[in-house]
Length: 495
Image 1 (cartoon, rainbow, N blue to C red):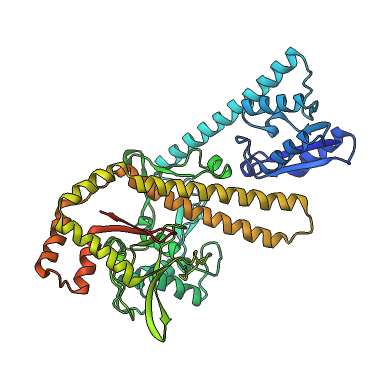
Image 2 (cartoon, rainbow, N blue to C red; image 1 turned 180 degrees about the vertical axis):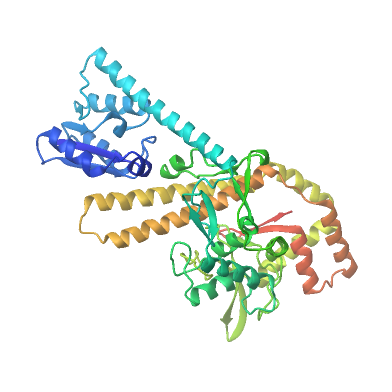
């Protein structure tokens, strides 16, 4: 049976005018019959081999379901010459004829040469377009123009003048977020409280969503653009699009500061308030929540080794009495998943961590052993490996959903879209955490001797009767993270 393969990337559809429907129409016409198998990759780059429809096409070809494959053009098959040649060879070995609408490629040395040249030119053309685009953007930025609409909350993008102008309605929300966070007299405490308040009062996000995630509020508080300092060319995003579509961790790196292009835009927040917010954000992870019913000794430090999420304190009942635990459960603003449910007794974990810290104070040599172990960063590498495995599972999950859609027209497409969106959000969270670990691995942090001595001195002042508040201070000075494994083992990582 004849089959047609069509593909278009998002970029090509918007810029070059390629369309799926147009390709299908031309390929069906070339086939001479409407009774064809259709394989469609809509929104996928031609630089990768792993595309849902192309993978299904190859599987069906191996199964003997296809006698001829019709494609609009070689660069619809792939933008990479090596992939074109690989697929051409694979199909020929199965006795399948590969036909193109836009040009005939005979099975002759000349035909093969023309096919190879066409692929090489296509690949070269894309590389040149990319080079010109990146160079043009950089020059545009150097002239004091905003290169693209970054959807910055609080601003409109003026495409004609290539600049950002204040969105009066959204800018009031930005000011409100900074005021709530920097003024302790407000009842909305912390990033999570602000996100919940914005959700409850019906304030829409930049994309019109009804729910504010705490990470969105945090990003607003950390963005120095609100002081009027807009930075372009800060991140090197080359290859990220291809990596994301192939399911790999798409880590963007920061360019050297001398390559950044800084321009002035109208400010919404003054510099003093912004810097104070940064100070509070930096300390936020270590600040105790004094307004809480129960003050958790290890608040903000515990991470689940099973799924990588943070573990937070929670009260439960045991034999009619309050019992406190650390639990992997996401109940914060905008949470899409509930966590894996891993639990550990607060008293048990507090005891393990405090005894570990005390043992280091009583045996100073162990701190240097720890430093030597840290040089290898074994725990970070193990965690990065776990995240890579999770990302691979995520990739396979999305592939299965896409395959289901192509096989069954009766499926609820909205439900499938929601599932894919959830997987994409999970991928973003994992990638963000992966990048954070990668940064820690590169920076090669070690135990700060002065901080260690300060904490040790406080411990020695009290001996074995250190007040709880000072225990918390000492732990926050020494401990970077506590990981509870699926089996209940505890790993303690120091600064």
